[in-house]
Image (cartoon, rainbow, N blue to C red; front, side, top):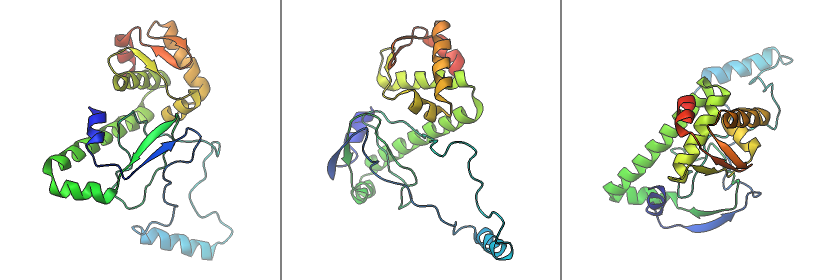
Length: 220
């Protein structure tokens, strides 16, 4: 299971208690011209010299500057930050009070080089993360609002255990950011699913899956 795999990764280099209001444990690398696209970089520089008054860069977002895109949510015992590049491309934020075990990347890679079983467990964990990221990409690109919310609730229930009651660790705004929706759409969709008899909501943070089969028919 996930907690056991996480405990076997490596002895923690240190422990950090992250508050839901604290800064993220790491921040992404600052954007810069891509060294793999020299022709594009050269074209932009030439255009800037030839037409200094023209806009020359990425088109700014039409939405609010405070909008966020949440890529993945983590459950207790799961690992994050194990990336191929030297710099982290994403930031992490705790939505509830959380204890983090900080592992040395050198220690993890060193043990993987010596222990084939350990290396295979890392590969399996990385593959699971990739599967989840691909599923989330499909959710954002192809599914309707009600399909996204239904899939989200099913995923939360699966990761929470056999009980068909989901304790939501985040509020409506965080759920909306994760699903690429507005907070109002998330609230309306939850109400719609409750009226259909698929869920009941004893409280704002607790959702009971009264008809999981109905949810699967919507979210899958």
